[in-house]
Length: 399
Image (cartoon, rainbow, N blue to C red; front, side):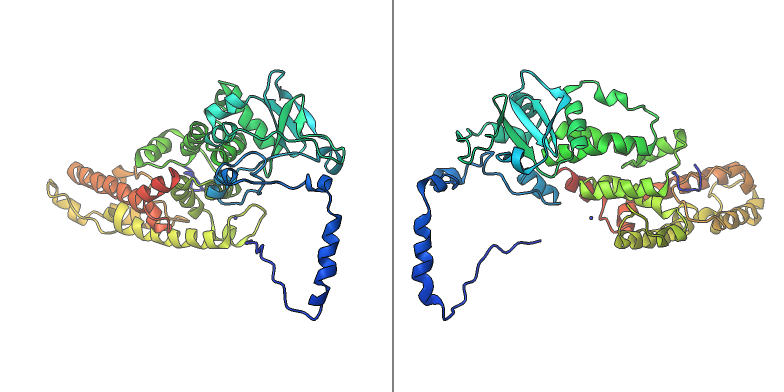
């Protein structure tokens, strides 16, 4: 593995306060102005019965999604487009995802997708809940604007969702072999381009199997087990650019994939200090950079005291068969060479055993100490980057 870098982001106050003023005598005239409200104008109002309160409908869910994953899932915004023609740019039909027998029209930005309620409901807990709730019969607006239907299908606006993300999600839903289009040896940038939109909407709309599929692909680049790391290190020569590692970190933070973070932070810690001082578009926050740099110091200490301690302070094996091992200079020389490296890499498997110039029993003893140390470092990786522990990360991710 290259030493380059491998292994390698308002609360709203809806209350209204009326101060007591000397103009309260004008209240009568203010109330009189309400007499101009006609029955026709009242058709714009939405009436709710007590039965409506606990049963959200497509017309009710009009709040825009927040950046929180939980809020995105709870408030996945699906709103009928009542005034699309007059107040927004004309929407175009997607060339592929306009199904002649579709039963619902989704709108993302300026693109329309005619798809099937049953298909979406079969994949998504959110859509399943929404589509099974009986929707009210909505009368066309009295001002002459178009009703919220296209070709007899209800139009549902996906607020905050990008056209590209929706297209990627529909490919994953409708095309059985969609993920086979991603080459097994695809680089990190290609993989992120392929899965990010799917992961974002699969998280928002609770499409669990697609979310897990995307996370599994992320783990091919940023493993979450020691065995996964060891296998990757032995077979892959991936070299990650700092901007791609930071992009991965941002995606994992945004979309609740914390099991990716420990190794991503580890990879980031191996870049030069000067990269952390630069501020480029798409960079991680300064707080995250600080955490990574703190973790780097802990990794350097772990390399000296855990994974490569047999070089810094050589100890003979209890089964040593050569008295010369007690005076071997190889281990200390190897430590100085390791210490001169630009940054610590305690997870990297040490392989210069022949340079130790010690007996076979001592080599075997050092190998065992080294492997146990690497596993110990992996176990504590989340903790050293202020992320908790592996079990906590997995529990958080699976919520």
